[in-house]
Length: 286
Image (cartoon, rainbow, N blue to C red; front, side, top):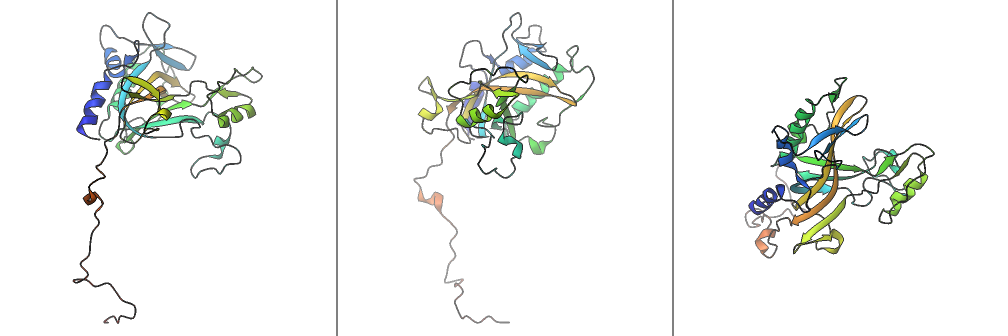
């Protein structure tokens, strides 16, 4: 994370890749102005979502940060039957359920704006009439209150969507990974989410599938623009924000250390004249 990357991040925080997308920070700050550019509406009995005022259009936000890490872009944390379950991954992620998702993280070690804007949104939602009428507490996860857990900001999209039992499943898009398709086939109350986040790169003014680029995946330290929607979910025991990513677009590569200078690979050297190496059969005093 160098000064060039920092400058690029600041530039893309206020820029958008597609007309109609809304710069996230400006939108959040507008909520305390006389002319907010977004408004929260009750979408379902438990979900409040931000819309463009005066329209039925869900607000699509754009923001930028330093990429940290991600699960597999196409299979997320799903483990197919017959495969070894990685350590730390619960066995229930073998099949379609609400715990399966596509997950991506931004490095927020130095820039906490993701958390600051989230906290501003939370403060605003607490002033919205009829939000959280039973006065539930905010879920602890990724609240930003514990400094030990603010070095990464995670964004997740559910891999499967809940449906009523017996309801016909919609057609699964061809781009969904075969593992996800197979897990969906076994499920009775879930279908594959067609809105898997796209992972792209901006090269010479053209957006390309990351698989067609070099490098062909996001790297820690890349400058990445993310587009997403924002909802607040009031669950049975708590409430929480949900930022659902739509696209991740690399607009700048991670800084590269000059690997041509051999000095970069130097290791400590012990002077054998001052400290000879121990020899087989050497007697030790004492």
